[in-house]
Image (cartoon, rainbow, N blue to C red; front, side, top):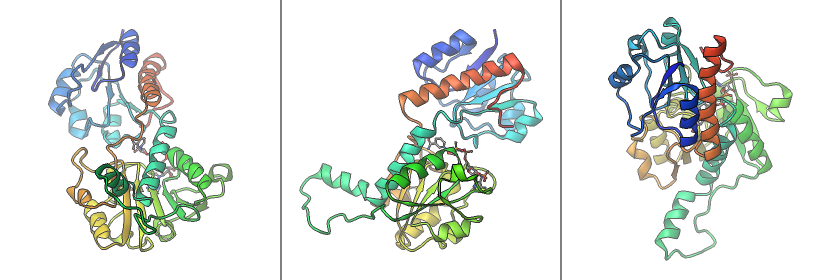
Length: 317
Ligand code: NAP
């Protein structure tokens, strides 16, 4: 039986599945392992089932024991893993696509609604009590007819587009490559970021974190957005330059932000906390029981498939 290290707790039913499939080392205290501890605990293991909280950089990967042949990430994103370093060590890296698309798109739409309709301020006022209804009280931005720019129209972006369209939004998108008509579903393609941003009343960031996308939304690119645009990010914090975004909120260049992800989670830039117009969530994208179960089961199946066949359909390196 292959031996694996599971770096974070999974839902109990998934841990049981892992224990039936492998000799599984569980992290019962759900401790955030240091890189040193993760390397030590990997000793004698054939694979790792990692989470996005594990920073598997070049140095950590170079120090993993020779026996490690696969890193199965419990996420669709894999910005926490240096893919090249893993490839050099002949370690396969896999992810969990598809199964979290719907749940994450739901949060993506919640960010759009929450930021546009001033949900943070509304919740605070409702809890505080004493608010007084008036014709101009907490007036927000209506979605009907607004242009939604999707940066990264992949699985999650397409699902957000579908829901947003039903709310009456007009969909624009930018990817490096144009989608086929059936995937576009009437959305308007822009072959560069500037053109997308210039028509985005609301921006939904849905592309992966990569060397190309780090700080893609920065001091210069924010200026391409219309004045009073709303920016939402359901993908990864690395894509946004926080200082530039907070400055844009202060200048009212940006009307509101809706964020689920941050640089340096869970310590988000305190500048966001000062802004009532920041609708912020603690990385809830895939957080439903069905989805977390499906993700963990897929991460386990990826390891099983890899050891049974020497390959895996969800291999990303
Ligand atoms: P996906 O299907 O691979 O879609 C990614 C899209 O981004 C593709 O359309 C891709 O198109 C585009 N893209 C990639 N690099 C780009 C670049 N440099 N410039 C412009 N567009 C680019 O991935 P997904 O399943 O939708 O997931 C997207 C991301 O969401 C994940 O990587 C993850 O980080 C994040 N996520 C967050 C949560 C959460 O909890 N908040 C949950 C799940 C996923 P091209 O290749 O044609 O450019």
